[in-house]
Length: 476
Ligand code: URA
Image 1 (spheres, rainbow, N blue to C red):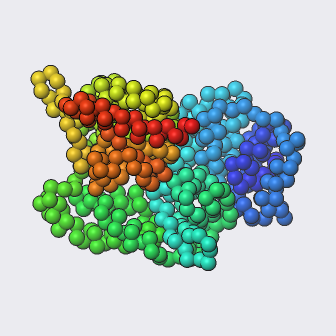
Image 2: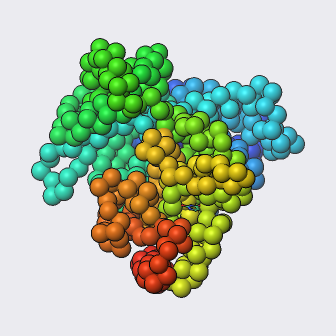
Image 3: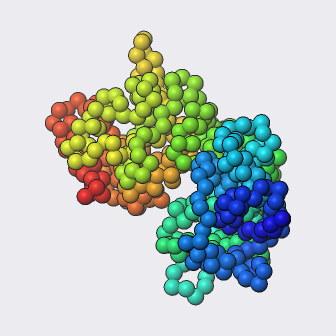
């Protein structure tokens, strides 16, 4: 019997490779059940895991041969490795053994007990990562440092720091931060992500200047007409409440809810839910695109043929944001394929930009129209529809991390640059937003096409091309 301790996925993978090359069956291995208590710097057999790792790194030449496994298994194993279940290493090795011994398509058999258990573990870990992304709140620490540093404390259910931290370094790349969990900590210095030991809750600061901001934000998104306390507790588990400044508001908000509902009825506001309820857990472009047609956050989905999600390379540096799909876009399921798209194509060409390098999307994903006989005439989306659709656009921009965003028309400009933005006065100016260091607003090609005065139309096209050229700078 071989007794093996592993602390993380990389340990397990390297041990599993050795076992496979020695033809050791799962019944001949005892994986240490208490390994999840070990941090990177904990002692094992007199040596730290980190030392063992660095030994392993030095012995590149002695590594056992690589084993080829289907990539979905590696993806599954990376997640399962973060689960707290002490049997996970054993279960992973059993599945791996079966895969390399003739059951290559094992993961496709969802009724298999091992596969089922592994999938449940992966689901729990994915959900935990999702919660971490939603519930981590940074506090500014007033340490004697030359720059501001932010600190967050979070208690995940599983050992997910390494899978979750890259999201925060992308999302808050211009901020130095540390996230502490009881198991492990992650540090981002605006260049490098490093990991260290975990810390108990009382090491984290209790409040700071950011808290009032969080509370105002939460109070503004809290919809009293939709209070479901059980669901809130499930979505925002009570054990996270102490680290979420806005939760101190919950009692007050719930007490005031009936009065606020009445007020909302009077003001005709509220009630609309947003696309946030329909967002997938994984928020990469592919998952978002697959989920958008399930969105029922506003009534536009009832009449439109389909939701029209953005198109373009996931690593596009330039993103163009329009208003909403038109008649042709609604039918074809792609943005900017109608008359406005044709003008956009020629203008991009004149600006020296290849359309295939650009990501194109819209603020609102469904076509809003009015029927006139057989025709469907474009109708401007109202603020409630824009608000409902906003999580889709935000998630798209977060996944893309573009260098430059160009808003086409007032709807896109006001969605990303603020309601007070005036296209006629502020067109072409560069602004920093949370989405991109350079955000510009320009004319919407459809507005140019509607211009009755031909001289003015020519002038607008010139300005449009000029504004797009600012996007071209990043390609040079
Ligand atoms: N107008 C837009 O704003 N977007 C499209 O996709 C087409 C027309």
